[in-house]
Amino acid sequence: MEHTSFVTLTRGLQRASLPMRLFEKAKRYGIWNPSDIDFTQDIQHWRSFDERERTVILHLTSLFQAGEEAVTLDLLPLLQAVVAEGRLEEEMYLTTFLFEEAKHTDFFRRFLDEVAGAPHDLGRFASDNYRTVVYQALPGALHALRQDASPANQLRASVVYNMIVEGVLAETGYHAYYTILERNDLMPGVRKGISWLKQDESRHIAYGLFLLSRLVAEHPALWSLLEQEMNTLLTPAVGVVGDIFAAYDPMPFGLLADDFVNYAIDQFSKRYARLEKARSASLEEIFQAEE
Image (cartoon, rainbow, N blue to C red; front, side, top):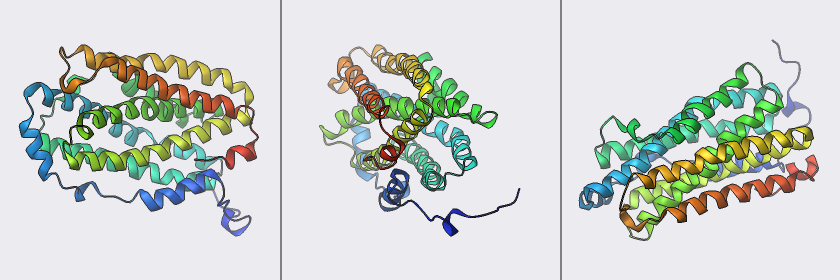
């Protein structure tokens, strides 16, 4: 295969488009190093926890650790699908995804090694609902793009990755970390890392909303598939929250199951409403939309 022309030598870059604006934010806010985080105080706090409190934090962290590694492993086919369509601005932004997901994998493993001194059998925390989403649906949808990078398969991949794994599981997990650590002024190093992760993931979700909106605008018949995929995956995603609470009685740190189930459903509903609103938008409006 040979190049016949280059975008930057012909039309130039569409700097006002949403992908390029996200790329600018990634360059500005995404350059942080997990190795720079000071865990000195976190280690002291960890030692003060009782066994049940440590187990809950390990449970939550293990789900993040697996999820971050999974998207690091599985993301590349989505990037390749965008590259194959010649969408340079989107490709430029997506180059930051893999770097950021790898950093997140590094961050959680550093916490497990240096603060928690965690064993290497943390897969025991993965429930059937979690495995359905992260072990099965995520790699299945993303690696299907290697054989068939159709708009329908791109939509499936973005739904499971951006809307469910990031938009429901990860954001509900951040809410749990915040509830445990922020309100109790615990583990400042973890809190700092989580704040940076949230910034990265918010950009990822913004791109996912953009991609799904673009796909539905270009192929209106895909809306029914989007509805089906979103609603099918919501059940096991919310089930993950229930599984965590079912494992502990009483639940440490004063956590309440309804708070987190409602939070997960609310995050899902907000993104669903954004996508529904985008159905009537033009492609130009989608490219110029707010992040």
